[in-house]
Length: 239
Image (cartoon, rainbow, N blue to C red; front, side):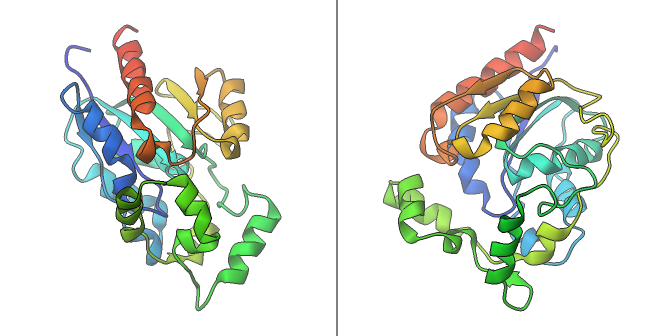
């Protein structure tokens, strides 16, 4: 690669771009970094996947990009890659869902997950993500008060339809082959909740790193994640 690529850090549609800002700050100065906002899209009508892709591609003006997704964003990285029109040279999943073409979030999750969320729904809407748990859960995930307040300020209600929409088939990820066809991929596991996804990534032959951190370490402990992404970009440059 004659020039460093643009790193695009995509946040979960359930939260806001503040989750990626600490990592972005560490990477800037070494790379150009874009943290697009998907804020509010999952609160409105679908189609969600294509609206996410449009939001990311709108400001991604670079010939070479590295896509990075956290949490629920991972499921949408293939459709985002297609929207970027073959400019993606590598894809990193950080404690993230893997792509699930043809399947909705509910289809790919245990039945009790869908049942629990449906029970919380009122007029087709779920409360913001932090209200799904006891308050102490979020406090434990984000101990620092100012950081927690900034994170909570970006949360919003979520349409139940978001969880019911199947992810689209794409050119970069086939439901039959279950692997990316265009670019190298890597996986970083941060929490026990994503062990199954990390195991699947490892079975696909992706370089897989496991850290004893937390799901929101992208916000609370960004240094190891920035180092992981820097190493991935360097590895791409040496291929």
